[in-house]
Image (cartoon, rainbow, N blue to C red):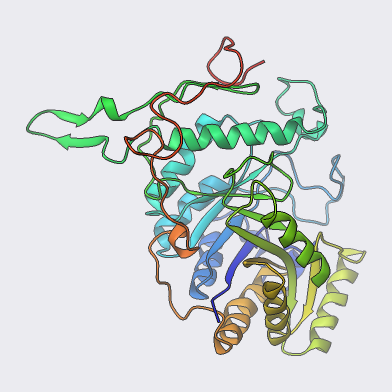
Length: 397
């Protein structure tokens, strides 16, 4: 049996709104580097493929369209990219995938931040690119009128990814010479302008950061959040609630023109040695929160063995991996790494050791050739220009 892939989504004290009130949740440490280092170390001890770090451009809210006034739930986050960069030197194998919102963020800035993360982690960086434009988030910036027309946010995110990918390729792999004898540090002929001109961005390049160790760090997105262009993302996340939805989601993702290499199902998980204890934990958390927690996608409440059965069943339905959302990080992350992982290993469905040096290799993905180098895939030295040239060096009007 081939191995399945596992990731964990990290956010605060856990995904249940009352997670921070549980014993061991460490609410006083949520904004410390040590907390995140400990959490990622636990995930790496379980040999997981990668972790994602949640982020946003406004405070968390119970409403997707406006602020709420609740004070009984965790509010506030550290910057995801900076947190991943802080954790990177403390880990050796696990992938680090911070969330980035494309809607208000320049792709040039993101490209060099993620290239830097890939360098400091020695090839373990990725990104979860989000496209969102609620008015209360846009109020932090004030440069454009919101809400955007239907579909424009996703199209802008697609352009964002394309620019980022081109900037990663704007340095050839051997552009750095570092020859003290001749006094040449770089070969200028191996640095390339990307000359991207589109509806949303105008970016000349090259980047200021050498090509990442992976060539292209892993690009991930939630299903439907980017325009369907072939090769746009490497991995998509879906949120099915049952086996039939999982089968349909896998079929839709792999049957599209823009089929990714991986489709991961998102599941919130609450685990215990027996189902009665798990159910009691969930009831206690719901009571503390004041109402039942109903996340997007499935909410599995049960034992590690039961979760292993579900994951294997959904994998047969077409999923290549899973991103698990621990209801309470203090309890459910160790239940994943010390309960679920050994259970999957006993069934021959999960690795016994890390066997690859980069995140792409861990997921069975090749290192892409540089599109601008001689013989590289995609564009030549100057890629085909899209749209009319407009003034400026960043976003277009």
